[in-house]
Structure formats: structure tokens, C-alpha cells
Image (cartoon, rainbow, N blue to C red; front, side, top):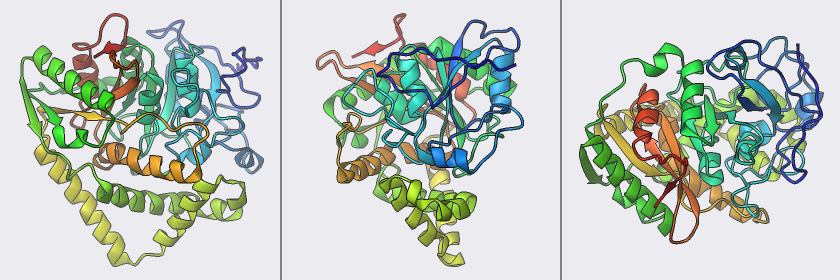
Length: 410
């Protein structure tokens, strides 16, 4: 039975949706006593999801059942601390368009959390939940993790059951995990990833450092990526290979991803978006209009993009085979300031997708590690991009570079 509560949080955090609820555990297991913040797009029985805006609630009814991934966590001893805000229809990487006031970033209070899993990231970073469950389509777990000083996992596409979660672009949609502690993230993965999460894990023989990708990120992030790659190779006792991966991390790849994603968003939600366009934030409306235009492309153009997508995935697989892990930037700089202009919002989105789109297109797992840059005090994220199915292996090797206090310092 669900329990409705007045959620106690510092007034300024703004991470929970209106009239949020808490839900007790339904069983006992490895997550006993842990609490979770759930992005308000996962079905919870008798609850009407917001999908990031009140208009969705007004046009949809309550869920008849709880999403399997949430039910599994409740059965394993975790409880829901609250249902967390999210960016509108899960289509943002900024963290600026959550319903009501955008959630607070406890690490950088004058900056956004990044999105679209903005609420879960805010709640976990503020200590209001032990872990967060969100989604990652184009970076919606990875970007908030990097922005808020958290561990974050975008798993192998298809590894975790995402039924009864509102879709955005199904070819890229994944369930994602946010946590302050690596051990907690690993426990959650073992519950919702099942036996597949730990099956046939690779032995890494090479750590790849994409040196050309560091030229366009802030010095703190470049330092963090280099140091994590060096320490990881040392810990694994394997080769550190400095390679150029710029052909996979660039604006053309972002455009390919956004075209394919946009068409899928239109296929998934076109009629509702057409009728409710005025309820969306300006930057979301612009993406919706472009998605409608892209849906009108000829079959030949669409097939060309599908071929480019397959070629990208195959080429990345050749450069990063199953025994390789790449250590990559997650964001080019700090999260966007809360007073950022429309132009700055657009620029931030484009630059962030350079680093997140490759993982989305390839369906590979990526684990974000929180790093504090000692010289500047800045908190940044470093990504471990592995082969498909290597989710548990990424968590395992991250232990080699993770200190007892949880946050790496470089």
C-alpha cells in the first residue's frame, strides 16, 4: 500500500514533484534501508506521472501497475523517498525546464543540475535519497552525474527492463542509476540488471585515452581524464594507449544522433506534442518543430542515416574492441548557470552532446566517476566507456581508482 506523506526537504532543493509520495519497501533484500528518488516518468500504481509538466497530468490518467524496475527495487528492500522532477518529456540535457522551480545543484548552487534526470540527481546530491533512478537517452544520467558530483551509469541499451516508463526515443532510452557511493550503484545494478549484468564480463587489456578530445574541455576535466586513465591502467596492469577518437566525438555525430532521435520522438509523441506545443518551454518547442520536419524526410534520407548509424557503431567497435575501456570527458565544462540565456542553453546542449551522443548511438555502457580537481576545487565527471554488456566490469574496475571517501581527487 502506498503511503502519502509531506516530504521533508530543505525548501530550496526543489527536487520533488507536486504532491509527491513516498512508498515503503515491499520486501527485504540487498537494498534494505536504502531510499530512492524516482524520476517521475516511471509508472507507480495509482499515480499520475508528470513527465516533467503539469499538462501531461491533465491529459493522462493514473498508472494501473508499477514499472517492473521500480517493483524489483521495492521488493529488494528499498523504499521510494519521493517522485522527482524531470525536464519536460525527458528531452533536455540542461536541467532548466523541470515543472516549477528547477532542482538545486548542491555542488554548484548557481548552476543547473543538467537533465533530464534533474530531480533524482538533485535529491541524491542533497542527501535526500541514497540513489536515484532515472533515464538516459542522450545523456540524461551522465550529464547530471558529472554536474552534481555523483556516480552515474547509463547501462548497455536493453539490459534493464524499461517497460512502464514513458518513452522518448526507444532506440536510445535506458534506465539509469545515480548514487553518491559506487557500492550503492553496484548493488542497485545487481538487482535491476539481473544475471545479465554480471555475465561474461570482459578482461580489460587496454585503457584508451582520447587525447584529441581533451583540447576542447576545461583544464580541470582534461587533468581528471588523464589522471583517471593513468591510474586505471596502472591498477589493471595493462597498456595505456593515447589515441585520437575525434572522428567519434564531434558535431557531425551529434547531428546524426539528433536527427534519428528527433524522428523517434515524433513517432512516439507527435499527436500529443502537436496539441500541446504551447505548454512546452521554448527550447523544447524548437526541438519538437525540428522533429516534425525531420519526420517528413524521404525514405532514402532516413535509410542513409540508419546506414551511417550502423557504420558509426561498427567503426567504434573496431577502435574499441571488447578488451578496451575508454576514459572520456562527460561535459566540456561546468554545468550551465541558472541565469543562462536561450543562446547559451542551445550552445551548452550542442557542446555536451559531443561527449554523450557516442555512447547513445553505440548502445554501450558508460559509468561516470565524480572527481574533485584539487588545484581549482572544481567537481567534474569522468566517463568509463566500455563494450556492450560490460556494465558490472565497469563498476568493478572503478573500484581500483575510487578512494574510501567516494570522490576521486586529482
